[in-house]
Image 1: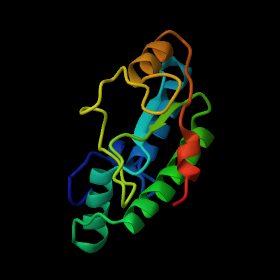
Image 2: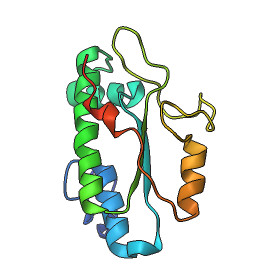
Image 3: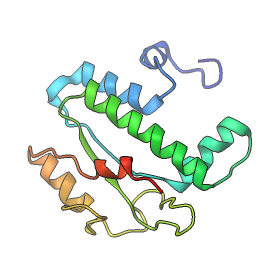
Length: 147
């Protein structure tokens, strides 16, 4: 509220330190089953991890340890999504993984949306299926991967 001067109807829905989880949970509470909520992310997103590092330490860094932290936090968020939004669709993927850190590409922009990205369906197929009332979850096993 102080930094962005957000209206109260936006800031009131933010109850944890996870803006995305709080916003999607609020959308589900407001709209219920009239909307389909989908969430996708690479499991060790290099760019998001660097930004989180900047928020935490003032330094945009990318290390295996920061990737481990991102993966753990993402798993916690996915658990929150599944708890708060029973019919949420989740697509966790690995693409462009660095051989040393195992950190992954940010967003699917550099990939073809019809590539499977390690799952049975591509992101494009996953979205198409969800629009046609077949909401699925893929890639949760990546959240438990260790190195």
